[in-house]
Image (cartoon, rainbow, N blue to C red; front, side, top):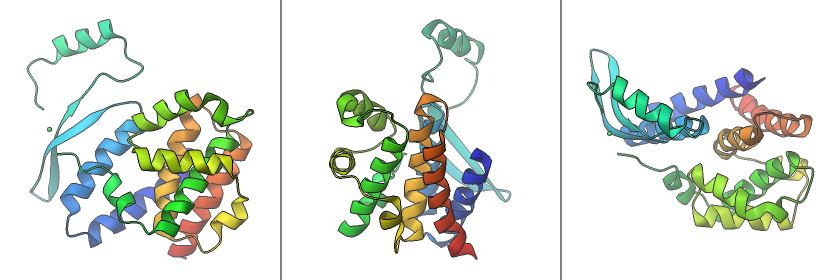
Length: 203
């Protein structure tokens, strides 16, 4: 299931990189973003090409599931190795039109609601912290919170949804769904519906 969702995202990002004049900054952002989904905070410091390959240097902070004692031991074990500019996905979000942003807010709110048996607003401070840790800025967080207050049907939100917006929501939706380390049926349905928008584009 997860592999089926991730593969089209990889294809989408390849297409974006092939078209983007600022591919270096975009790839830098992707690396930090995807490692972030695994609970690893990483900052790319250097990115260059040589011999038909991409060489990346980065700084990685202690993963969420790694205890301090374990982390210090890891640092000691690799002290002789290498390390480094992050362009946040906020640039992509910032370029969206207001209608596109509104769809992002409400779709992410839908994924959150799909994974919650209670009103997500009741535990908003904790949820907001998790979302902020994923790199979501205050404007995006405020939009999601507003979307939780006014839920909409998934069919209505998917209508005329731009594939680039679907890819943006899908990547973050997967991370949100995995906050509790599992994907329930409602989350699965929502993520597959977003995936279907990407499939239509490649058809």
